[in-house]
Image 1 (tube, helix red, strand yellow):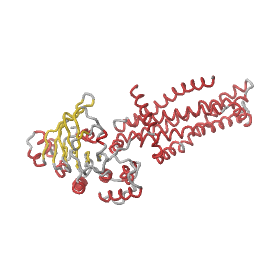
Image 2 (cartoon, one colour; image 1 turned 60 degrees about the vertical axis):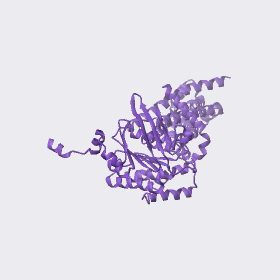
Image 3 (cartoon, chains in turn cyan, blue; image 1 turned 90 degrees about the vertical axis):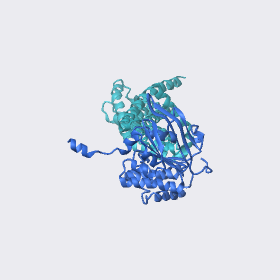
Length: 249
Length: 255
């Protein structure tokens, strides 16, 4: 396990060192950006709409019983901005894009395409890893902003439609506007950037270390997704602690 | 990479040993290949031929021994970078999401060695050279196995190599395509005098193209010589390997 962590950190460092090459790989970055961002929009929309809705559905009636239903907007707003949108989007992208990255690079490794690149003095980190990690780091915060907006809408719809909550759109969003500050959104975006690095690096690392044919590719894909999600949840806890420490200062 | 370097190189392998865990795969390999020579390494599957090629191209590091190009050890990466090497992989190893043209021009494009229109011209020229007209915009998945192998050779040629390594270039190919690939290897020698090392267990190809042959088994070189010398060898393994034939009659008698 420690060897894996060391290799992942080394890969991340080498990718950082290769960042000046990003412009040269802009075409591949755009292709990846389209794949990660555009093609995930529908899933992100559905997921976020229902998460916002379910948060409102669970907490709205409880708040209404205590006569503070008007605080629902802030509650939905904060929980989505600081926690749910970054984590759920990260899990979605780990499953959808991390698995694809591990499978694609893994099959390139198994079928000697990565070796072919090396024999042409083309660094696989520059050619394969850098565009993917750069694209995921651009796409994730954008997807999280999109998720927050859609999730807030979902919460708003439920707050209006549910007779036990029975808020107006205006009350819901006015409270959300009062409670949610820019730093809360920034908090979520910082998390999403960290998660993007985790998904990109873990998935590319799994792809590049794939051995053993189709079964090996399958194993790499599973490990990429599972390891990414576990790391995302662990990292989420620690980033939250750091952020709370800053909030308290 | 220096343009001043001569167009083919001399290769010497000295005491090369490699093990993976407990398994010793190369047990002290020694041979040399002269400039412009086609040197064939022949042996059964699992004898360590492909591992040997991976060492020469720099994809693996030996546990012991040395690899010298023109007398200089290439185990220091800065020396290796001064030579233009190309390898034709057993699977072709073309990038499936790139077109044939993009695959062939990849080296020039990634290293920014030529303008796009010039790359296009060179790619067309190399594909024509290998009889691959009209496939530039196709994906590798749309081509036959033999065509993919020829595209892989075209990609190797774009590097303008001083040494070309072929890893089982005719595996999975029919006899006619085997001859075509063999002729391409000979044509390249005639045209650009490149040094070639071919790893194969295909006897027809080996004796058809080799200037000299090495017979390899169980991580060791058993014999090095011209095709005639190999044919005359009385080494029991070489006799068995060269005379191996499918005994259909014996099997039908048994049944």
